[in-house]
Length: 569
Figure 1 (cartoon, helix red, strand yellow):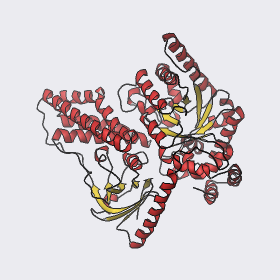
Figure 2 (spheres, one colour):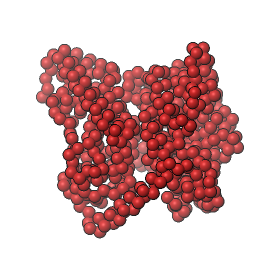
Figure 3 (cartoon, one colour):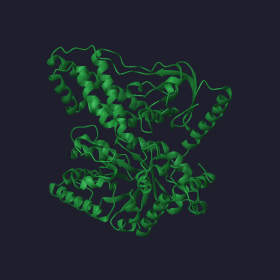
Figure 4 (spheres, one colour):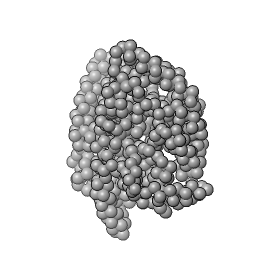
């Protein structure tokens, strides 16, 4: 049995189609002169751009705009004058078009690939796929087409690229197995959109699985069996039947309100990274957006997005929800999220450095542009809310609000419509913010607990470091106490408090969060119905009893064991 990361639940059984495309070999290409090479590059870029638009349209029709955004992102990179300009510059220096593409894209691949954040690393895969498409076009070669794969195929690849995905569907592809990738990889996103069982990060899969071999895949537990024994097959068939029954059960919760067993209403929202994901999340049961990560508007480009571009993106997300909140986090760059357009300095310890709200307050004109766009996006709706990341003290909140007032004055003087009463919230993701939550509550209109960084900073654990990643756990009593005290401070101040970190999607933590009085859960779109169901199973009395037992435990393992013993998920 092979192990990896299960990114889409379910069981798949079938025969392996092993796909291992190499970077096109252009070593035999020779320059025909700068003008001719630039013309070749322009023609290839235009052809790839048209193909990407067609693929994005086809994908949007099949699985929605959220997944089509993968290809839209590649189109944006291709349209970036900086990238093409760099390639033309190398051609003018004597390079053949293929070399210019390989060198420029290689620089971006190295930049993004060095990041610790999985979402940023995924940009490296985007650029690599775009590079290979351009090279194949320049060399006159065809893209790989998987639309003719036979029914019952288990797709096995080093990495599933956008170029390989358009023709995939559940009728033919029983499961997906990749050696590379993580929870935010293309394979994961597409698998979840198509509801194809998938396991990524399976080391040695290409060597262990022969073409045409029988393969069994457990997408929930991240397990893969090449040539499974009959006993394993029978076990997985039973597991698949249970999975199908669960899918049917969860579908009942699509249009239901989010309420506990004794009727308490809880808000259930979605985390998104791009504006088009808002409508997709609403279609999957979201009542609003609990976290819009705006940094992804700033990645993969030479110039920062202007006010009009940002306004269009924020307005698109706001329009997806007529009543529900759309909480938009201000620019959170630095740490492991690098934005080339901002020319940020290299730091020895970027997670403790010039990032997020610190960077924005030191770049007031950049920050003002975003604040102006956010104010205008809320005009006439009142559902847009501003969330400040990585806050450590009230002085940062006050400084941000002062800039917000300046933005209001500018918009009023220009006669532009905006929301004068827009709410400003604080993201509680540092120990300082958690310990000073009572003070911050006097400055903020709401809290949103970011458990990913809160856990990392509280436990002094780099979750990207494999040697200590096992210490990273939201079940640690210190993390849970920070969450509990933060919620208590918000409730004492009379402001709502939500959670947008990964812990919000953990069914084991639901009784604790309900017992403490969390008002809003914000999770990935794929977790919405599962969490709504779990919330519906808990009454206040039951949650309080489990909370008392769990919080009496002295270590993370005991806490998790206690919660698992009471699991209703």
